[in-house]
Length: 298
Image (cartoon, rainbow, N blue to C red; front, side, top):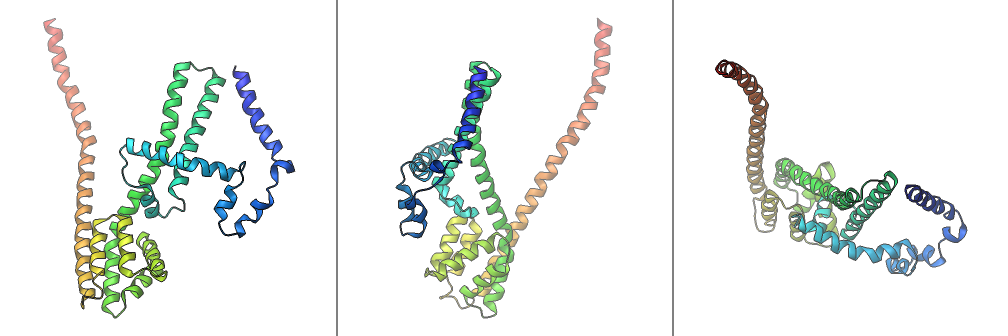
């Protein structure tokens, strides 16, 4: 059975490589070649029944539904498109879920082949078939969650400096749109990337207030919500620069407090190994006379 499984896998890989060199399997149809230059390119490419694109379009809705259910089961309630927009990943929700399902299925197939080749017990293979795809799914989900949390943290850390820059530009006579464009052009952090998207939305015809609200909703940071609420008073407030400067001082004090909390937690964590290192020798020294007394009584 092991030889049959290994031979079948090698035969599949070899046949795929060999057939990919034949013109019948390699050449795309005329409709597929001219579809990128026609309107409705997605629909045209999906018209090929035996193409990879059509198969992917068929599996995307199913993968999105199954992946969404799996994410909710493990306590991830935030919308996937929102997190993808936050970290600026050039991929939509359906493609992300399809990638997750693909890695899970590939992991299950690899575990099955390895189990047949090595002759592992059936209960062990079944357990690996359950745990392996689940781990593959969760690893990809955790990568996105980690990137999203890191993006929010960096946004909070950069916000005092960005707020001070906006206050300085607004106080020197810049309009709100010009100040946002200048900060996005001269900066290199995560907020600069977000503000670049905001300025693009404004150039496309979206109002400044709506574009800033989209940014605040995507980032989901309380300090950003307060800053956007102040910037939305651009046409009503005469001293917008001073208001933004006051908010920058508030955000900086919050960032300082969070930093002090992190330092205190690290100090407490440092004392854990020190305490253990001091207790273990003390306990050993206390056990010596106790064991000696027990031996005397014995």
